Length: 341
Ligand code: NCD
Image (cartoon, rainbow, N blue to C red):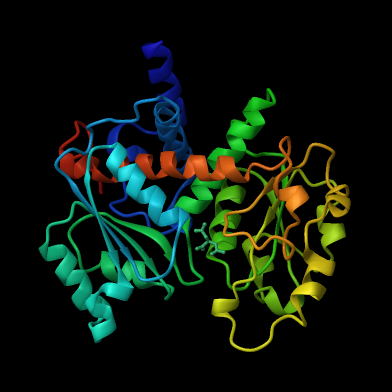
């Protein structure tokens, strides 16, 4: 068993720290295909642990993980907290609303403060694209991006890939990667870091990605990233294997981008009738939070055999455990992880 695992490992990615030679996890854009597969494979052990009655491992005992969230979050913050705790770390949450940020402290001063407390990993969510990198440049420990503005949300894309892989394998498919799959991402692409990270991740794993949005919510020039662009949702869904729905990010909109939520639902909401344009076994995904009746109908979101929305949430904890483990290996002196670039 062990030797089979070792040779499978050797065929998929380089040994030791070369499997993941990054200090930080800022975006999918910085990752090679084999590094994505490495994180997904590492997460499998945590999926298994999380399904046990006792979900604990002392791998990160004695380490301090700070979750610094400058934007609201339910799933991401909770799952990073659970992930750190299940690995035995001391996890501290900093909410910007109660922090000195409200007193005018700059992001860099906040970073210097977090660094002085000798965190072993810092998880950051911030409303500005690039904020995570800015902090990473100022601190001595690994930094994990939990969503920066409209830029990237790498752990979301990784958990989506893991959830999709599990759903495909449950149907008996090998799902080594996503070659041959057609995946539609529909919604507010313009403001979505989830769309951007998923486009990069799904393409790296071989999928064809179709992006669908009203013209005002589609970033201009996105075709250059290799996506197929649609404004007609029925056409986008034609023959698709997966429909990934995104919320309208009204908090990022200045001005009126859509005529009304009702009109939007009429053209871009995923209904049962509309889903019939996709393949008969097409899967439905959503990163949450959902606006039921706007971008997705309840009868689709709750379809037991097709919707993998709750599986996405489940996989979020495992992916974040894998990311915290892998990124802290150098600091923990794990053999073979000390000398990468
Ligand atoms: C997403 C985010 O924050 O970017 N949510 C999440 O992390 N699950 C998507 C969203 O807010 O719509």
